[in-house]
Length: 333
Figure: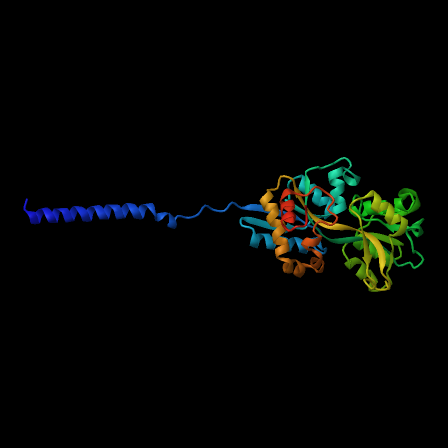
């Protein structure tokens, strides 16, 4: 082979080797075009309350926030029978998150009141949100104290409801017998309002955020009198139950209510099951507070849902994910 042919042969082999190496290189670095693994979807059903209440629009806001800010979450809010119904849905694993009163959550974990025979220790708290004061309403100006309810027709909430439990607690703290000293009427908020209008009911217990629509509706044609739950009655309740705190219903909250009224309050809160993923629980709490404006837009009570008050009235064991968040924020040691 001549020198010229040997040179051409060498060049040809070199070009072939470069081509082979180039091909190998492009094959090894082609991972950039691979599709990432699909994010696993997590379905989060939120148990709220009736569509006309406060829980439902808040649940809708939470679902929107979580869908937009937590990767893989598919959250939906569903209308339910509120606190007690929500606890049963949570126990049956039919929902992942519930909005409940903190007293009902306490009954659940401790096996009291309506959960005396259905204790559920695996309930966990995410945060508390806003006050739902105990409101004792009447259109009769002669009823000025809890003691004045003796012998009266009194709406005490639906059977087995949190309102009924609160009514029983207040009546007992006043030294009266629930079964003998009042004529209990087991009515919903709207039914109680109608009963007060028609003078079929003398007074009504309600546990709800203020202003309560049913009471405002009543006040459209009647002067509303709010009976205080204070003094010795309040002291007894505060000593016995950890979920109560003091509350002032500001003057003019309702038509005819010209003075501040002292009462007690429970708190609306978010609860989950103990087995909820810790990171997911953490993100749920964090994104709620990071999107405060959306919560306020959903309902006026949203302005009270802040991280600084997120542990006030926490009546049950805190979920580790929520605990992590509040510790990071310096709100829990």
